[in-house]
Length: 185
Image (cartoon, rainbow, N blue to C red; front, side):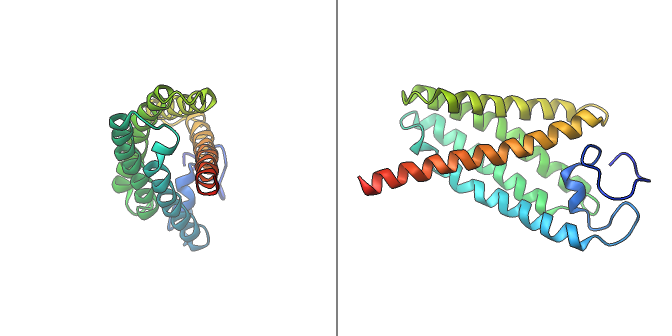
């Protein structure tokens, strides 16, 4: 947070991680927000692992690309779990490392997956475009993190997190529908 005197959480000036702080900027305990936030972030990371492990359902073939993408994707998901385990106010270095693992592993995982999806011949160009957009947005946020804090950086983080949740929901739904078709048909 860059306005330490402000009361409460500001959507455009605080990172999501500020919700996981064990103490607010004013010094008061923050269990009402920190416990649910940190648990939910950990569950978000854990919920992404099955998606990465099942990517071959959406892009059969290209197994070498998918294996590399899966390893990087699981590493990225574990980075998100790490974010939930390292509140930024009590473990700032661990938190920064976890965020870095999440994003730095996510970008090549998505890139490799996108290539595998194109090579699979399934004609899922919409998935390719949405995945490349997600990788680009994550890359922008990584580059922004190397600069001094700005409101644009906080805004990019919010868009990135919402996009990731939507992307995984759509991808998971498609995997579920493919599984149903296979088991029914």
